[in-house]
Image 1 (cartoon, one colour):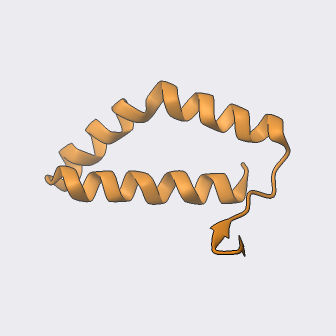
Image 2 (cartoon, rainbow, N blue to C red; image 1 turned 90 degrees about the vertical axis):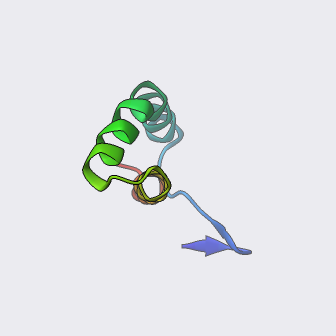
Image 3 (tube, rainbow, N blue to C red; image 1 turned 135 degrees about the vertical axis):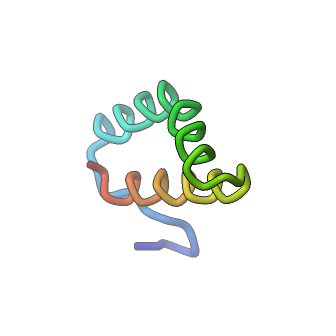
Length: 60
Protein backbone atom coordinates (compact mmCIF):
# COMPACT_ATOMS: atom_id res chain seq x y z
CA UNK A 1 0.00 0.00 0.00
CA UNK A 2 1.41 3.40 -0.89
CA UNK A 3 0.65 7.00 -0.07
CA UNK A 4 2.14 9.59 -2.44
CA UNK A 5 4.65 7.02 -3.70
CA UNK A 6 5.78 5.98 -0.22
CA UNK A 7 5.00 2.70 1.49
CA UNK A 8 2.61 2.98 4.40
CA UNK A 9 2.98 0.63 7.35
CA UNK A 10 -0.35 -0.51 8.79
CA UNK A 11 0.91 -1.85 12.09
CA UNK A 12 0.87 -0.64 15.67
CA UNK A 13 3.97 1.40 16.48
CA UNK A 14 5.10 -1.21 19.01
CA UNK A 15 5.13 -3.85 16.28
CA UNK A 16 7.19 -1.65 13.98
CA UNK A 17 9.62 -0.89 16.81
CA UNK A 18 9.95 -4.59 17.62
CA UNK A 19 10.64 -5.41 13.96
CA UNK A 20 13.22 -2.63 13.75
CA UNK A 21 15.07 -3.84 16.86
CA UNK A 22 15.05 -7.46 15.65
CA UNK A 23 16.28 -6.33 12.24
CA UNK A 24 19.12 -4.29 13.72
CA UNK A 25 20.15 -7.22 15.92
CA UNK A 26 20.22 -9.80 13.10
CA UNK A 27 20.79 -7.91 9.84
CA UNK A 28 24.45 -8.90 9.53
CA UNK A 29 23.73 -12.53 10.31
CA UNK A 30 20.93 -12.69 7.74
CA UNK A 31 23.05 -10.92 5.12
CA UNK A 32 25.90 -13.38 5.71
CA UNK A 33 23.53 -16.31 5.28
CA UNK A 34 22.07 -14.87 2.08
CA UNK A 35 25.48 -14.07 0.65
CA UNK A 36 26.67 -17.59 1.38
CA UNK A 37 23.59 -19.13 -0.26
CA UNK A 38 23.42 -16.75 -3.25
CA UNK A 39 27.15 -16.22 -3.78
CA UNK A 40 26.85 -12.53 -4.71
CA UNK A 41 26.76 -9.77 -2.10
CA UNK A 42 24.77 -7.32 -4.25
CA UNK A 43 22.03 -9.88 -4.84
CA UNK A 44 22.02 -10.79 -1.14
CA UNK A 45 21.60 -7.12 -0.22
CA UNK A 46 18.70 -6.79 -2.67
CA UNK A 47 16.96 -9.84 -1.21
CA UNK A 48 17.59 -8.59 2.33
CA UNK A 49 16.07 -5.23 1.45
CA UNK A 50 13.01 -6.86 -0.13
CA UNK A 51 12.44 -9.03 2.94
CA UNK A 52 12.74 -6.00 5.23
CA UNK A 53 10.25 -3.97 3.21
CA UNK A 54 7.77 -6.85 3.08
CA UNK A 55 8.05 -7.45 6.80
CA UNK A 56 7.44 -3.76 7.54
CA UNK A 57 4.43 -3.67 5.24
CA UNK A 58 2.95 -6.77 6.88
CA UNK A 59 3.73 -5.49 10.34
CA UNK A 60 4.15 -8.99 11.69
